[in-house]
Image 1 (cartoon, rainbow, N blue to C red):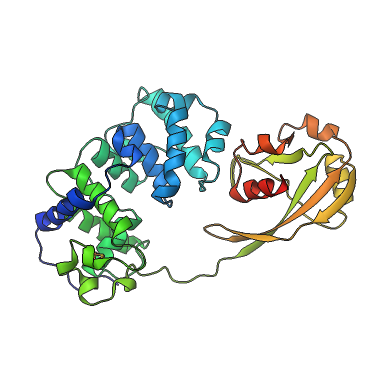
Image 2: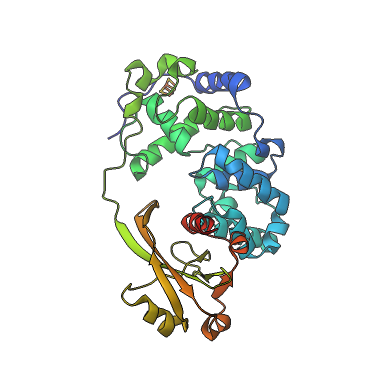
Length: 356
Ligand code: SF4
């Protein structure tokens, strides 16, 4: 379902109000705004996908301290990149970032391309991220359509229907294009993001502080909470996994580097047990490890975007190392302090910390 009625409003009215608001209330001290080079804009935009500014800032600072530009990121190992990304989630973003840096180094002289088509061709760069780079870094008139902008536009125009649905998304892109200003594109795009993040928030929007209030469809009907329409409810499945948390008398723990594809691709995790019957036999048959004690820990839940994981850790004390482990490069024993420097899924990191 789409629109009820669109406002008869000039483009400049919407954007001028937003720009005036930005001049007084917009965020101007974010770290990536201090150096709005294409590299820094790209990096921040990727980190900000599905992630709040306050979470991103320390990661962004560590990342730019380590990798000052595209060429240094391309030279890094994917393991080091994933290690710096640990805790930020959605690890495909880190893998794509690294792949894109290698492509740009090989094909674009280690520079960000400056056409929307070339940007969209990079791994992990969608139309909205490409639009943000074009606007914020190259000052070209392109719209964005991230979660904040979708929320503001669906409320402002009264657009019903889940914004992830193609027909609604197309309608929002069209509207975002119509509303673009003819000047100050970078400030305008930042203003859209800021308004969504600080005023037109998901719950309890601060409509009394909003420059769009006078003709906002949702505000005038007192129904901001009705927008954006949610995705039709579907049941998120729950998977059960069993971790083998093997530990030597020296307290080193056994970790396995996961395959590059699938959940937590390329990260280090505890080996998973297909069965919990006779864990001591599995340890011997599969890893050639002799066990002295097995304690099953309380299970805990970790929620991912498409499913939930119920994680059952089994703490297994082992007497000595085995040839199988030393000869298999996907497995390694780590002191907990050293393991915490690796690229780890968030629940693995949390569990390792609890073992200290
Ligand atoms: S008036 Fe309220 S609902 Fe409308 S755009 Fe502003 S904050 Fe959002």
